[in-house]
Image (cartoon, rainbow, N blue to C red):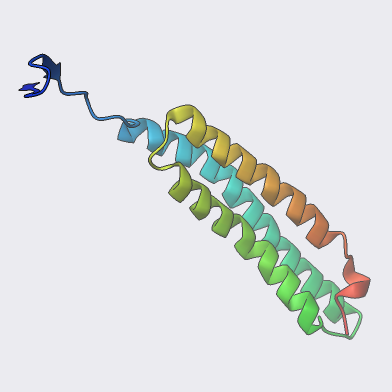
Length: 123
């Protein structure tokens, strides 16, 4: 489709819409989503495992412990959703980079969260 600019008199060709094909975006999201899902599953395992460990010591997790362990489960999900939302209108490379940076952030924060150990999470 061509448009005529009344000021210049030259024909302009309309640029095709920019964006990533949907199948490529979904492929990237699914591949990275598996890594994020593994981190969330790891958080569930820590929540259940540390709760059982505290019960075997005849004690319970503190409120701080519950909050920290629940944050470890929800953090990968929240970062994944945020990275998908931010990368939705960007190129393929930027989408993959955002998801990779988010995955690195989740790994670093998960390491920080679970470095507290069982001793600081129980009552």
